[in-house]
Length: 398
Image (cartoon, rainbow, N blue to C red; front, side, top):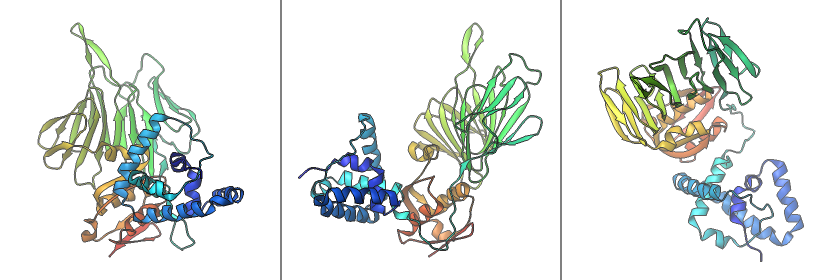
């Protein structure tokens, strides 16, 4: 009997779709494959049933960890898997708990639990790349509605929209007669956007966020203001000072804190409806100062600060904090209230949740490209709470 190439199975989206039962063309593909190889039908159907069961019964948290490790190993090999994979008994698959968990996690990510039905529940689609750009003269541009190319030329700076949907600033003149001009980019609920600032720094805006910045940075410092959540990759800039080269610092201002950066990657979550401001450092170093009491702390890579009335510094779960930039929701012992705040911003829906249910904790990973029902089902399958979607409002009950 031929043996199963399990890596190919995990990588074959059409097989996962076959287990889900949709779309029809993938189901037909595997049925045709089995018609040509009827001797394998019993084993394939057995594997299909076990895969379906695993999707419901394996803990998502364990699967998440194992899937990420498996994904890293596969990525390192960087091989294109043979599509003509071989079949074997399920016992060899079941012998590896790691791979079992990985299968269930992959199915979870591919919406196995979220098969569309014909119910009357409203379908709320996920957010997308959209934002409003306000120029120095007060005019506005809806970035999701304009064509690719140059959008504006102001103060010696060209503003362009790329084919990939990003906004890029580039200096087109050495001199400008209005170096104090500034722009603002703002995403609505259900929106996100990426841009490259005039100094080459990059910023990713999450839903319901904004970034205010000059189109020409000063020679001694670079300063921007933000609301909501923004991930930054700051370009290093230097100037000659007292006969030596010195870095030009970059400052990020929020409502209650200021971050001083010399060149680094970090994420700032400063939504007003969150318990506090969370600053997570991935690379480099930043100094975070509270505008409430002047308290100041220095973060190292892998650390994060939480600011309410005072700073609390600790180790960060970096993957969880920046998962949104990779298109995922990652929940690790997160309160239902916190999950629903993220859901509200990304799907542009209202939430009605009793305080006692908002304290429930959940684990899981869901792609931000999934419809809203994906997260609702993730919560409901635990049996801890019921979620009902009425138009654009989620109502949570016992």
